[in-house]
Amino acid sequence: MVLFQLCLLRPLLLGQRNLCGLWLGRESFIPARCPTKTHHCHSNNFGFGHYSTSSAITGVRERTLIAVKPDGVQRRLVGQIVQRFEQRGFKLVGLKMLKASEDLLSQHYQELKKKDFFPYLLCYMSSSPLVIMVWEGHNVVQTSRMMVGSTNPAEAHPGTVRGDFGIHVSRNVVHASDSVEGAQREIQLWFNHTELIDWDCCDHSSTTRS
Ligand code: UDP
Ligand code: MG
Image (cartoon, rainbow, N blue to C red):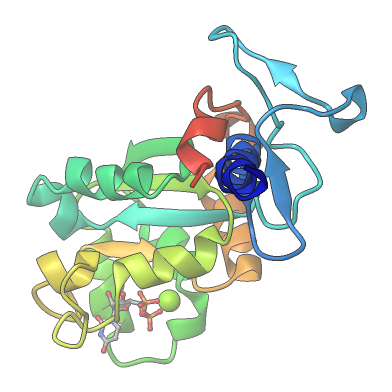
């Protein structure tokens, strides 16, 4: 009888833990609902009380700059690229389409100024519109780089954006910031702070639970 109760109670207790939120490793835990008022919860229009994205959990509010380059826009790949980031659970906080000036692009690619391909890069990147986005989420910079794949599509793994769609190193479909500091610099370069929307995802707790 005691054994039966233990067998019944254990999965229930473990299940209850899963219902309570998301484990982010040994130390970090995001409760699905606020245990106390001190956790700055919000209730949104959908009636879900959930943990605010402005909480103190390290890295949840990390942001990165993703751009669909002219070849990606011309080949109508914008939707598929946006879908990959949405499916991965990241939050879109900024998006715009523009034809970039060579001046802006040379600031963006400032580290590559001495490379032989630099003039060609500017010419290609300014040739037609880009779709520039800011995505937010846990470890988004590093994860995005993995999702995008190697610079040279010939070396990019299948399943990555460049591995699936890239044609050549000079036509590799997307840009993704390569560090948290780089992302901050690039976001400030491309976006005015009023163009970035700080919003609470209604399904934050349900999409991030295991
Ligand atoms: N690029 C190029 N030829 C090269 C290397 C890079 O045209 O031999 C272009 C390519 O579009 C690449 C961009 O320059 O995405 C920036 O290069 P970086 O090394 O920063 O690669 P990324 O961070 O985009 O993977
Ligand atoms: Mg780079």
